[in-house]
Length: 326
Image (cartoon, rainbow, N blue to C red; front, side, top):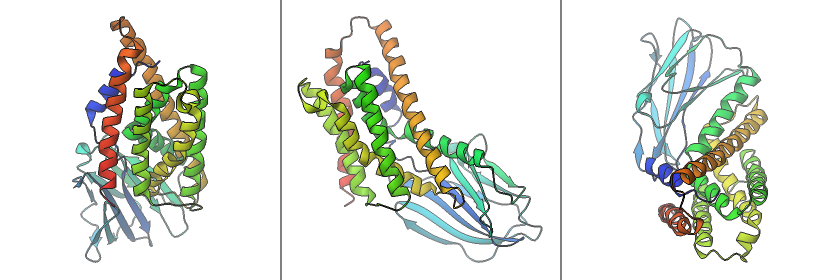
């Protein structure tokens, strides 16, 4: 169970800086039968903005010059359009999505607060607004579950934290308690932050999330069996889980929640995070089995320092980068 080094190294080799999982988003607000407003947001990752563009049919007229801003490390574009043949039947396309590292969340709403929410990606780069009737609650739930799964599986900082929790748990019983504590804690702060009941700045939170991985990596390196962290890993997972919940909420705030189904979307996103977390833990177990078959002489003690140094070094880089923005 503890032999996770190879799985971690494979994950890390994809992109050491792949901790920014904010999706791009398109928000269309339908004003009347022929006019609509557009808000187009593209995250800036590591100082680079992806080359993406929203395109409409030739009969769509721009009513005024576009307004652009860079806010909270994201490029935001505002525009108003008119289509004499009507908004119904309008097709939009995301150019450049074939080179994108993530999905694009599309939300279409009208004056009656009816909302269509869907995800655009390489397999589905365009969408046709065929109806102004809101999407079903089931489809909204599936959309946000998918976003939650994607966030946890691509959010490398959260995965490294979970991997360290698996390592320090020691037994399956402790692992169950540890993961449960992490789930309860981050679910609580995700709800509090997403609903606006308790909000704190995300920059220090992200720095402390990186610090939480450094702390666990240090505990793995010391390997003091009588330490509080190794004896009661649920205390560590619950304490730092509160901060990870604020991190999840920051991503969710970038995505946005549909007004009419805010609670459903919030619950679905959290479910998606948990599903992704469980999938990752299962992947670690499968990786352990494969490594055990290939390298039968490999021991836990041989892996302890490499796992600690790999996780701790990457998290230290993140922590320095995140502290540098203050």
